[in-house]
Image 1 (cartoon, rainbow, N blue to C red):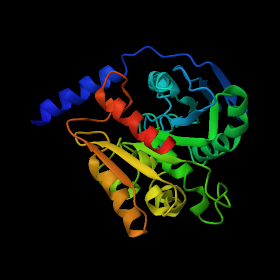
Image 2 (image 1 turned 60 degrees about the vertical axis):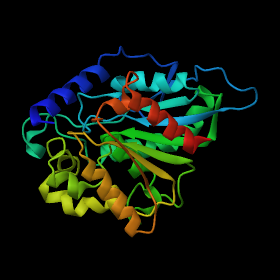
Image 3 (image 1 turned 45 degrees about the vertical axis):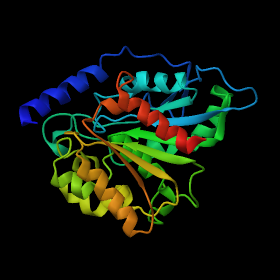
Image 4 (image 1 turned 30 degrees about the vertical axis):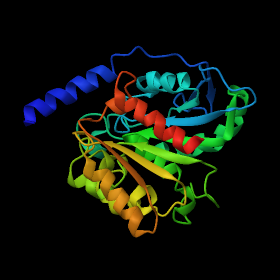
Length: 294
């Protein structure tokens, strides 16, 4: 396929994914005082088996950690999962603003350390919030799911127990998760920077060139292995936004650390069909979640 044809297909995939109207949650909880420190809850829409609670999917949206992209664009995906019988908690978090001093023109990717503070705080607060908002959910069957930059955050959140001991987000043991499903994740910052993924987003997330090397051990999933938590990456082979090489680099790093990470590669699939309810790839993602949840 020519470059022009590939770009046209990618644009069509993005248009399809963003064409669905946002779906309002059943309820919203807060885990802090900032307006972005909220979690939307979607109760399972499918009929439940009597006496069998629904698995809980914790969803982290992407968008290069940049402010223009919030959880609303992931709400059709959250609704899709709810209609498949999952309970869903969709997490919002603080993202970057227009700070030229940190990364040039345009919305800067993420905030250090605020973005990481929020993910840690949200996951810590989630069990109590979910018990109240989603009584149908089984917290013992929790799967963490993230797309793109959210895939990075999902992998990172599952690795807090292997963070350096002086990290403020370090935990004494692994999170009680059935697993992680990371969708086209920005999972290896060194490779992502070499490929200029999302306009050097990972460089901006860590505060620029002067902080990148120092902060990488606290933020880069490829350096936070092994986690001991079942992990599956789902990646489109035709992804132009976060190329396949990024997921492969993470899987290779995991293997070197003695951990087997699943890598599902989808032919003729780009970046956005993974969260597009109209795409076949989205059904594959739901099945990967179910494989870990049940």
